[in-house]
Image (cartoon, rainbow, N blue to C red; front, side, top):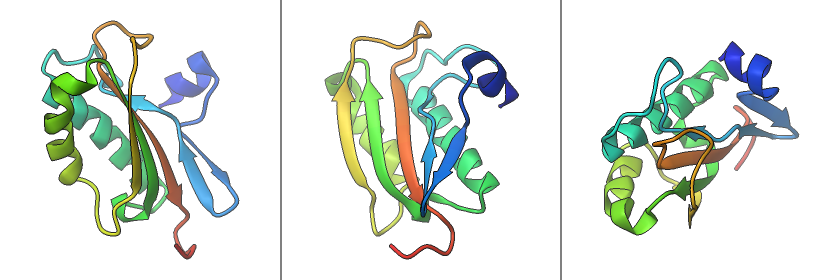
Length: 123
């Protein structure tokens, strides 16, 4: 993810206090364009978040807050809920879903903003 640091001047994740704030990750793979299939894009976004969490010794159990941004939220909300359900764990994180006009990369329909508690921090 060195491209994020070099080209965008942002960290994949940053620790502040007892929490880790992840950069918004969208449905665009690091090495190519976003898939045309909405569900495939959703899985890409969740998989990238999974990788960043794992790099910090965490998993979805540590996620306390999720904001998801969608182009056409109503068109794919049920699919998103199904994909999300295969990643999040109890206690489920707080979640806000927001419909947006678009993203910096053409064809992207979803982006995830995640806050997790540090490993060892109490909930």
